[in-house]
Image (cartoon, rainbow over all chains, first blue to last red; front, side, top):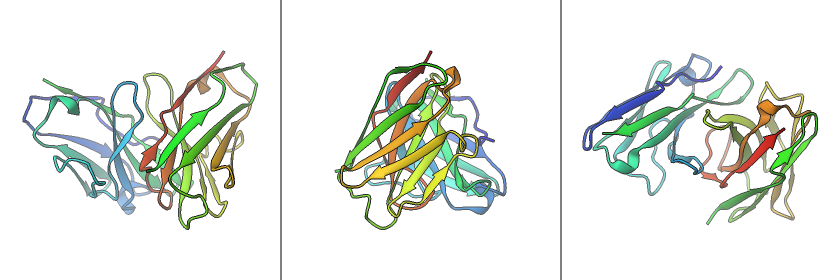
Length: 110
Length: 119
């Protein structure tokens, strides 16, 4: 089954928010292959975190990832208007050797 | 610079077979570890991982689609082809192909997506 994310979160300009992504011991809990994607309307997803904590080149340091037990988290610091959009987590799962995605979290900047 | 682009029909009928082609540039699918995968997204819904093919021909498929899906590669043309059989209106989605630098881990470059309607 899909990883569990909150459906929506909001924060004011300049504030920080944290998106959670809950899985099981067969995915997030036992593997370091957690990634996060940002998606703006009408666009393809964009990788912003891989390997739980690593940012690809060009991604702002305002994005950071972490993991504790079966739950991974994405923190966006200093919220900007352009941070509005959908955010998806993903993890390797050993229940079939494939990637699971979360249901997505819609972030609104107030 | 890595780029990928999906091409194929925009509308297909139920029970038919969908064939989508991913044409890529900026990398070679003979380089060790590299793979090209497929992800779809029904309108207004979440991403769903479908399949992945590696440089050495190894394939991985979503368990829920394993009986209907096939992915192949043509390294001479820099293309990966997705075939999905016995279509249902629930297969209506934007289909993305994407590059992975190694393993069933993450996708770092994505195509623009191709919307396919089954009706």
